[in-house]
Image 1 (cartoon, helix red, strand yellow):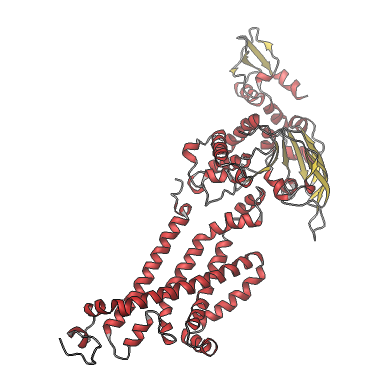
Image 2 (cartoon, rainbow over the protein chains, first blue to last red; image 1 turned 180 degrees about the vertical axis):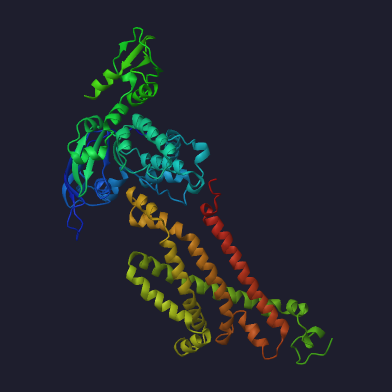
Amino acid sequence: MRAPRQAVEIEFDHATKRYPGRPAPAVDDLSLSIPAGEICCLVGPSGGGKTTAMKLVNRLVDLTSGDIRIDGRSVMTLDETELRRGIGYVIQQVGLFPHMTIAENVATVPRLLGWSKAETAARVDELLDLVDLPARDYRARYASQISGGERQRVGLARALAADPPVMLMDEPFGALDPITRTRLQKELLRIQGEVRKTIIFVTHDIDEAILIGDRIAILREGGVLAQYATPEELLAHPADEFVARFVGADRGLKRLSLKRLGDLDLEPANGAVGPLLDADTTLRDALSVMLNAGARTVLVEGGDGTTRVLTLDRLTELLR
Amino acid sequence: MAEPVIPDFGVGSDCVTQNHTFCTDWVRENWSSVLQPALVEHIELTVIAVGIGFAISLAAALLAHRLRYVERPFAVVSAVIYTIPSLALFQLLVPITGLTVTTVEVALVGYTLLILFRNILAGLRSAPPEVLEAARGMGLTTTQTLFRVELPLALPAIVAGLRVAVVSTIALATVAAFVVSEGLGGPILGALPLNFKTEIIAAGALAVGLAILADALLVVAQRLLTPWAYARRAV
């Protein structure tokens, strides 16, 4: 097995894309840097240029001016096909090859790179297991024989096949039903915990961005960067009215959903009463429980066997 | 048994001399001298015509797939050829290529072009856009995309075109007998003035049987070539 590749930094440096015959640029002077091994969500309304910005990285769209560097190397200096084989690419409609089996689909890039048969087969099995599709059951099937959610898992496995340091994902879960989507979002985070790629994840769903992203870049119409920040910063301090409106009036609640009871340093209960919750309950759910129960406190099992307490006042303080 | 009408011409049974609807003894006696050679020639005429027609159509379709403006001229020319009645086309060609197999093949090839070109091109264009985007995004070159994605996905349409081309060429190749004495048209044309039913029916049935067999072989070939198209759907 090959040694896993080190994640790399991606840097947009005044990246601009103009299409001929159109007055406004699609991506306008975009500068941001994505630290190695982090997920950056590009979000914004349609026409915000988020997909275009992503495609500038693997040169499915070429820059008009500015530069994008992966691990310090400008994408414009690299051979297109070489560049793309080093970048995992996942799209909403997946685009599995219908005439190839699941295993052959996943093996696409390793084959292009000339891996040996044995090495490719071992890698395919490893990846199918990683995305929770038992290789024994799925290897020989065709795309028409699996569900939409399974297809996107295969799409993810195929993108990860040659262990690229960078992944581009264009609304990968946008066409899935809510339950499957939530499951795959969690799977992605679990997989990312194992593989540590630098990921650009395009979505129009701010909730998805908050859940998935280590950082979020909000683009407004005309491909202008409105704000680039961690979910916490974005929700606490939206840069302007546009961002505040985009993240939604419930941004206080969304901030609460970022933290879990177990993350907090809570006081011992000392005889306080209230509903008892798990340590992995989000603060948002804790608040909901308080409101439902008409209580001003909830209790949580501390790791050391003690019971701890979260009060409504403490929650309000946390949002300051 | 009646005495032979012409010496050394063979002996006709009652069935043959009385020109019954179908005489198996005539077929048995003339299989190796008349029918089998005609059948082999017929297969040759068809294979050569469809082979050359396929090569030309594939080249034109590949070109039209890359350069859109090639499509219309080729489609128009092949459609015009297709509309010319076969006997008229032979008449047009005889002054150029004479009473030869070439004349026959040129005409037969001409008739395959429209259906093959249209089907191959439609097949090449049938690759879903997201599949092509994924291919490009993974770093397949245009040539790799053509050979690994577009052509395999075009196979069902290509085979569908081949089936029509083969069957119609087998039918049409009987007309070749007006130009050269080749193929199953020979026995038919020879028997027409005498209205010798057995020979007409035997040669005609061979042509029909050949067409059905060829079609069935292509169906089997497609099943083997495109197992994915027959895979059981997800429930």
